[in-house]
Length: 199
Image (cartoon, rainbow, N blue to C red; front, side, top):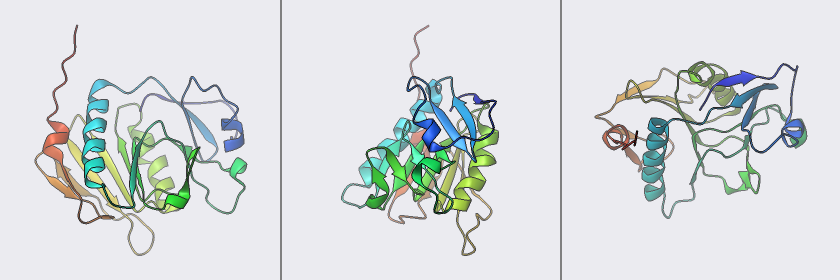
């Protein structure tokens, strides 16, 4: 994700979001708006592609589906009307196991799992605003992927609906999903990708 810039207006909703220019990407968290620019860098995209590949290949024949940004996730916190929802996010990767949450506009309700790939400009938002939002709406498993440190922090909802202490994994580890025990992600493949960049 790119630089998170707030618009200088009080509160926004999904109704406002639908009227904005499609050429720019935005997120709304608690009614506050963030501009998702500039585009993610090459390392970010390489990690995203490898994770999607591993998830997609292992989810074959299972009811869960994997999606990648840009993909709108609308997160109501109560029984508000859809146009009044104040949390619209575009996680890097998400897994949704309840097909009833999916529609032509994206996902309405909490995905079972969300992954955010950290960058210097979004780390605070991913670790704070999104962390508490995902916990509040019941995202069962939340991964924070650090390309520079080659680490993955895995948060899972406890019985009280709160994220416990993170499990920390490095580039040589394999991570078993909490939501689907039969799926394991090989981090050596995720972090060892070398991208050829022409100068």
